[in-house]
Image (cartoon, rainbow, N blue to C red; front, side, top):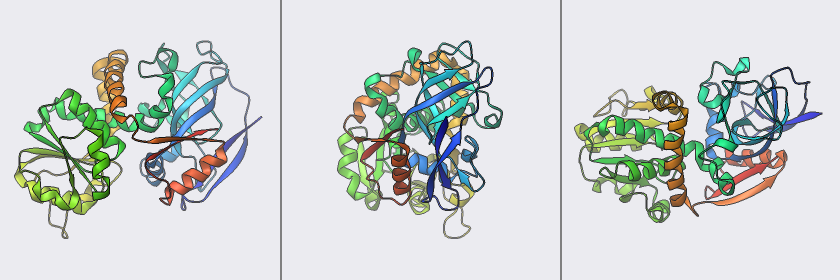
Length: 360
């Protein structure tokens, strides 16, 4: 029996091929997952772009010069050589753009397990965790597509709000969010509305996205980038999802000492974003990179997997109500479709209002 994998050329992400890989017999303690579904979003393109610097290529080995892009999705246990994992049960987690994945479950509980395969151990346990759907408070069989499309990005938004609230919002009266139409920004705004309603939420976006962002109802005010000067200068925190150095500099200039904290979310290198106009430093606080996996580890250490999972699930179900209808879900069968969709997304040919789900 063979597995099918999508191999992406690291030096040219628009170049991808399907490869048949023989499946070796399972060793004792191992489990073979058959990939049922995953979403392809701009987040997956980010994984590929930052694949070497953040070791995203290391999760699923591929031939020299190629990589397998990680995806978030659902899988079924096709075969098990582990006494505590039964064939047929379903899980959610980090999967390859492929038909199968072999894992070695460890730290098994009713709610999930970690893949303890040796080559995955240098990476964050957040990416090595698999949730057993039978005992998962976030799971809704009718909303599996939304979970794949929004879930990982929502969780980042949840963790940002948790971090800011734990710091008493640095004394800020308002939250400034760039790229307010992005899925992570919408997640942050949703959780902030639920847990920190006293902080005013201001979303910055392009003129063409104003109506869409307003329609979500998640922000107190939505402002186009070129109208930014009308934002009141109050003590504020900014969370930058846009990755645009000019926008970041504009925020720092506008608020100056009134900017209490400046968070960068994503893969952009801090030093490349900490100056404008040559070597001149940005006014206000030095931008700080927010790396969600590290914060996730700290969050679940503080609350435990059970209680922490319930907190995330409660916020997630509220977000689903707000996200209703914001994307049109399209389902495609087969890994050739995954290859086609991913390469089109790399070149910007996919409408961001579409949520793409692949069923290998």
